Image 1 (tube, rainbow, N blue to C red):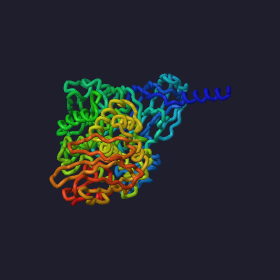
Image 2: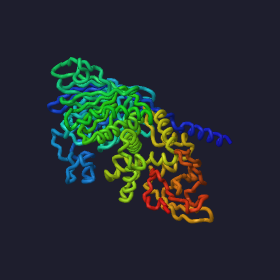
Image 3: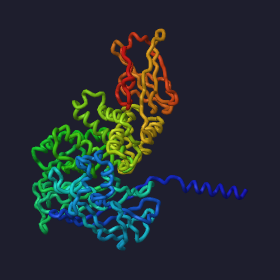
Image 4: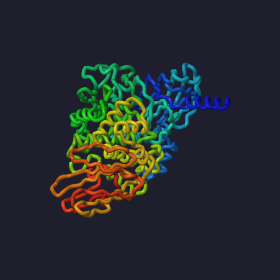
Length: 614
């Protein structure tokens, strides 16, 4: 009896200790001073970092990212490009599929060389493992304590290949992204020591206080609040440059963000857009005939920030900068680097909408891109298409919904048999197309189909609640689904599982329509292996319409009526059941058409069998 009692006590103790810890996140406050040599494309830096270990764990080892070490021949990024060959990002390989990194000369490569590193004033040893620095701490960092690092490093700015570097094709001298030794994130999933292979990132929230000393002729655009506008060029007409040793110091601060980026060029101009009850937006770019549409985006940008606030939540930072970076588009804290040259206002606006929407779905709702790129790229693509439809309605007038093109891309790609599951780490996809479809297209489809399942108004509530609950934190897909289930009152785990962990496809069909006395019998069939609820749209000869909603048994609920069309709820369709039938209380003669998912929000791979017409 005593032995049994002891075992019970032991087990209960183990259970109590093994309970999931309350949510926590680390914090890192940076104070940097940078001295840039614009002739040799090098810079020297020093930084002090106060690191807050808010976890319940004792940290006996520490890590930094040094991203630019990837821009060297035979790096992991170079090796991945060689593996992908012609299927790699076209900006990173030649037309023959040769990695451009492999062709870099010694004065063109990138590196971030740490000269010294101290913890609380004590020198520490470290090992550089390509783009990761592993630090042997002088003393463990105890739970709920702080430590301070002091670091000096020197850097060669690489030739522009992707996102960062010098002298890109549009003539921007310096695009400084992933440019400093950056603290690696630690959370309940452990250290996120992802090597830089060219795709996504993850970071620790904190404060950045950055001073950049650079040639007096340069103008700097950055993701932060400029502290000395009257001492530098471009931001204040009354400014008098404070020159020392032929250089000007630019001082920026940013709070509660997890990255800091900047760019510099002597030919930059600075324009502004004031958003009512929103940020001051900077446009930092080279004014020319090729960038003429930048000025035309000002009213569009104003509408964009107001509509994003209305649909998802308010942008919380005081400023935002669109900076001509010259290589596609890429999001950073409080700014985006985007191509300056544009063929149309609509094209430039779409690029701006996508990159700025990352402020919501990566920088405020800071999901781990390296593990769940679809939550970042996919949710951002959803917001981008929604904003385009609202601001440029003509662009979608011929489509059944704003996301129709993405839906078509997905269903076409499934036929290639190259699709990979969304849950793979971002850099581990076997093809560039496989990554793009999973992260951008299927990630967007995740929300489009969720809207189809729960209803448009319910999804809107989900997105706003998600933003308010998880802003300035690191949510996972588990956290998102928890909110979606709470708001909708539905069990959605089946949907989450099928979308993220499988490549199964949806294919529902109208098998038969027949007369049954004074009624019409409709027989449906599930030809795919991805179960979904079904909306059957019935259009009558007199033009009236009805929707017959058939939820899955697993959902345990019906969606709210989402439009003015009369909705009739039918019994559940069990996911184990391949066929389903129901009757309309009218004869077939007065029916014009019957269609599964007439709104085109379901990724059905064969729509030919979705419609019956008399």
